[in-house]
Amino acid sequence: MSLFDKFRRQKLLSFTMVLFTLSLGVVIGTVISSGVKAARSDYAASDATPLVIPSPVQLSTTFSQIAKMAGPSVVNISTTYLPKAAVRQPGNNGRRRQQVAPPDDDQGGQGGNGGMDDFLYKFFGGGPLGGGSPQESQRGEALGSGVVVDRAGYVLTNNHVVDKADRIQVKFMNDPTEYAAKLVGTDAATDLAVIKVEGKHDFTPLKIGNSDAVQVGDWALAIGSPLGFEATVTAGIISAKERTMKDDPTMQFQHFLQTDAAINPGNSGGPLLDMRGEVVGINTAIASRSGGYQGIGFALPINTAANVYNQIIKNGKVTRGSIGINFTPSDGARDLLKANGVTQGVFVQTVVAGGPSDKAGMKDGDIIIALNGKPLMNGDDLVEAVTATPIGQAVELTVQRDGKRLNLHVIVGNLAQLFPDTFGNGAEPESAKEAATALDFGMNIKPLTAGMRDSMGINESGGVVIDTVEPASFAEDIGLSQGDVLLAINRQAVNSVDDVKRIRGTLKPGAAVEFKILHRTRAGRGSDWQMLFRAGALPTK
Image (cartoon, rainbow, N blue to C red; front, top):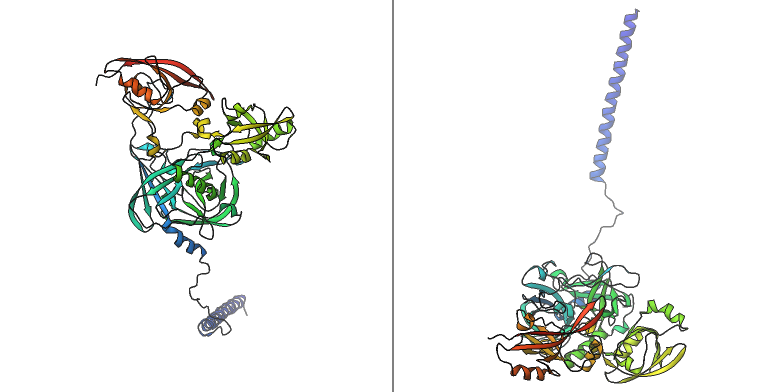
């Protein structure tokens, strides 16, 4: 056999083997495919249990029951701020006017809480999505919340929700009607206000709880109108108690419940509820770097709010006692106390000149260690005890001075009069504003009380306080300012509002008139009074 024949035979054999292999693969693939197809269509999982959808059953109804019960008692509050005329401000020498406007979304106060470096916000929404600052237009609007606490239609809310509002309107859940409300009274120190809804008769008040019984870890529900979304319910727990903003003296009466229930702008004034559906707090502020919810909210305990409410409905305002001192906060006082050989007490930083403690003989640097024989741990203990004491009542203070102890008999004074710049500027209801007497000089005046005189450091006798100065008026033209003390008109002493009225009655149009006043000038944190004379000719019309 030739070489060529051998090669051809070998090639044929190889081709035959390849063809056989391919044919065998096709046959095997077809068999396997058929087997799989049969398994998919014919095999049944006889040992598997079918899934069954259960009947609808509510596993927990506590939150939903509370929401249904409380919803009709939580209101949406909308406030309107109309354009204000320019008002004369103290210290501007009668030539500069400043536009008065409501707060913008009220994200003003910044405060600390120990090591917390977040911002503290009191808040209300400026519209459905929280925008629209009242300062951005001539007509401002804002939103907040409130809770009905009396069948007569009285609503508890935050002061910053209604502060300086020209119109207050209230809406209830599932009721499209907007009801008018009037301001009954406010308390700036606790940021609370009471309003009364008019034109509605069927009110369902929420039951008041006891915030002292609240424990850290308890469930809590917040209801309100965050960002304008009415009747919003959020849940969380009580994260902490007795939270204080120690860097802000104006908040010394606010010891908050902290919660992680989601609260946002528009929740202000709404209730914080426990699992009995009882009000344990009034949502007031949040700690946030963004101005929105970050898990740290603050509610004023209802025990504090109830005390404020009771005073407002009885007297139209809240009065608190004071002994006329400034003290060092507890954190800063530790070393001072230790240096004086004591571990607890209140270190007196300054004594208000002419105030109750000054009259009793207290000195800067004294350490108050007891009140009426009861030891004081810190300044909070002192504030709580003194503010609960009726004005005019005496307390016995045990003081340590230069290593020796002595007792001082102190008559409790009025906090607002002793510290008018800090605690005397809260919003007033219309009835209280009428206390100022309007005169056609273009100003309103108020009596100057002995307490105001002492706290303001005024030694001159007599006088009345200028409460407001109307824009473009005679009083403004000659440079009179809000807060000035009017001592004399045309060299005639002024000791009362009636004296001003009497002297005004003797003056004719076009007559020259001279005012003797005390004008406060401010430098840094201090203030001094200057004796000034202002004069001008009365308008002929």
